Image (cartoon, rainbow, N blue to C red; front, side, top):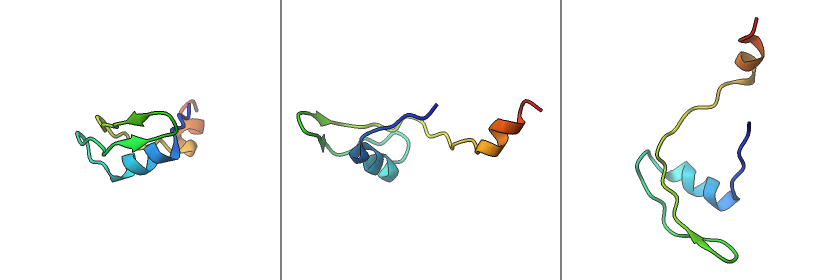
Length: 53
């Protein structure tokens, strides 16, 4: 399952290390802080398709 975030969140997350909090992210009608609590590398599609074999 793929989760999509606003592009502004993606940019902020790419710059964070675990435990860090982003600078305020302003969207149209709201302001957000993003905290990276855990990073898990994606599992390649090839593994997903073969793990049942």
